[in-house]
Image 1 (tube, rainbow, N blue to C red):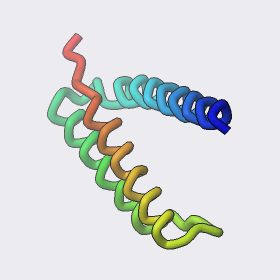
Image 2 (cartoon, helix red, strand yellow):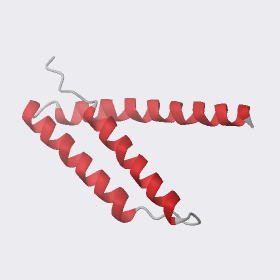
Image 3 (tube, rainbow, N blue to C red):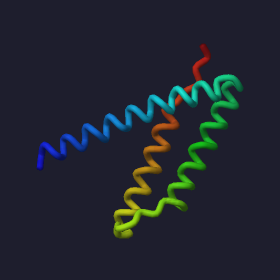
Length: 91
């Protein structure tokens, strides 16, 4: 069971890194053109919309309420952590 847990953690970490890098490239390319203020505004809009969507639209079938709340909370935290890690590149 310990090896399965390590494998799952490795998959989750790899998935998070891959998604973060894809989003970093997309967001940088999409919003770099408008300047720093537009960039920060768009990042905040995306964060708010994503968190709202997680809380209102995510329906987890076959899970209890506690698990669903926990997953929504963690997903929301991931969104905020990920999006606030992006900085405007002046180069």
